[in-house]
Image (cartoon, rainbow, N blue to C red; front, side, top):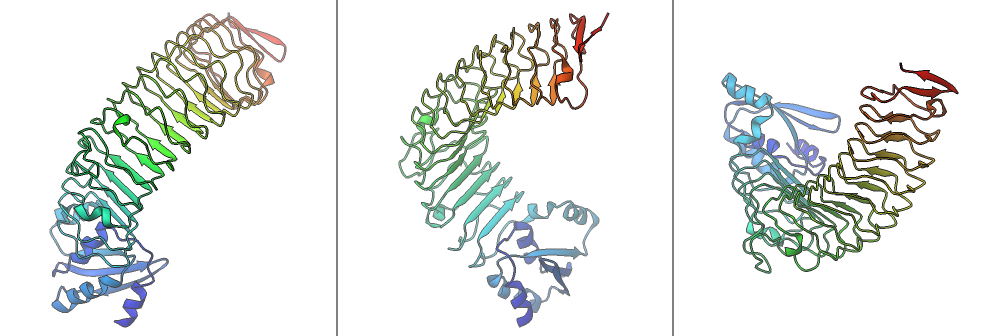
Length: 422
């Protein structure tokens, strides 16, 4: 038995609810169990006796990682549920957690209502699709650094957050962010956020009206902010943390404008599907490399001066956009303006390092400029007014170029030869 205990102690720090469920299955139905770690495993039998149960309960305190495969003698429909991975939905109570436990992942535990005391060693707590689970009020006293709460409808308010927290991800259509918080905020607000927080994801929280209802200042060290799908969000705080590198506010259909001064270190900005957004800040951060503003139907123009380091520019289905800046960044590699039905022309000189150009369904576009030799992909089908193409042989195109739907195109050049389409 000491040998088994030593083997268990070798496991990595991870305990899942499926494993815990199997630990609790010590009835006569449990006939066989496999304990595995890395590339090794031990098979042994349990008869559901008091001694077998006592062994499990005694040795769980030393476990940091456990991977179990079990076989059951039970009705076929229950066995089928286990084989489909639905085992965890039957968990109603977790046993006391091991004192060395570092990561706890709860997924699909529909009957689990509460958690036992969280060990001081716990660093990661992830709950997903746990329809009855509530966060313990003592959560703030823990040393958890990563907390994800995804589709847990009974968690209608968050407790005071631990000061150690560095990553918070919340995704719930029922979460209203109110309760006994540190600052007693109004409904529709978040609790006070830990100063050490570096990542905040509140995607899909439809009850959150404005991010300005957060504590007056977001944590100074915040690097990643996602509020994707917050459909009532109208604007962002004017002063975002200086160290922010990623901002995703896509699918925020009520968002009317972005802060005029975005953080200088921002590298990724995604404001796609923001149908109320009419313009972007005139001065975008110099370090921006990825800009996505697709399906912004009210967006009429882009800033005349785009950041020099921009490599990806995506604004497909911006139906009100009529023109692009006269000069695009020299290092731009991906340009997607497809389905921009009002776009009349592209810049006379495309970036010399451009690899991908998507201009399909640009119904007002009459000609394409000379294409750079680096171009590997070209999409220009269904450009119904396109009358002229450049010499395609000068590019390193990979795959076919479809001219389907280009009904106004009568001829195009390849290696100096003019190919007539009529």
